[in-house]
Length: 252
Ligand code: NAP
Image: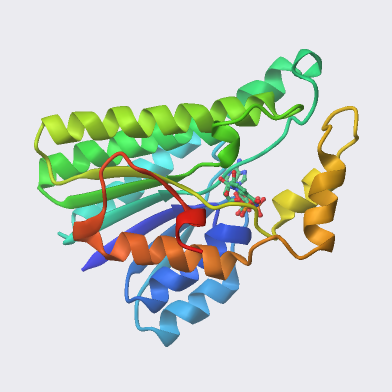
């Protein structure tokens, strides 16, 4: 049995990833603040289970309690492979770095960086204790590798994810476990996150006109296409390169 845990499943890329995992015969547990009824239907059509947990990943206590329960439930079923896909993410605050508020930066780093690290660590430990194959993926961004005017929190949080991925993978290699830790950069996709970007003030985000043009000229990718590439990578388990920062652009 293969079981995946995915964060940020109510819409966007997360919704597509869950749908495609269920269609591949993988049981899924999804976490976000709002639910998604469509995913229950996809699960029953494909005779696999889908369970949703409501949790605000901005709240560390609630996140740790929720994921302790999820990991105990899954690992006690003696699965062959467990996947964790840290997909939930936020872009705000969008502003010149010096104008951002501490509380907004703190929330951002909590959701985009701290939670993926804490969850990956929790699952790595459980997988080692139970001798189960575990594959962790965190959704990163091209913004991890280039500074973007107005996105200081986002560039920093995604750059941290890339370095965490490489470090945790190095440890798992040296410990000779069967676990893999990777990141996946999905490119620009047609989601609510892009809609918020297009609403930015030019003083806060200098590239806003270019992002409006991406939408007008149909350059935003469809989340099912991008999610399909990730699910293909994950389900070809023996080919996964531990520590690799995968990019969708290598597959399109
Ligand atoms: P989206 O449409 O804005 O969806 C974000 C998802 O994250 C939602 O399901 C949301 O669920 C969840 N989420 C946000 N804050 C949360 C919180 N505090 N607690 C629990 N869940 C939370 O975003 P997307 O475009 O699909 O992005 C998915 C991933 O791709 C993100 O990591 C993003 O950084 C990355 N990415 C996106 C693009 C792009 O062009 N869209 C480009 C590069 C990278 P609830 O609101 O229901 O909680």
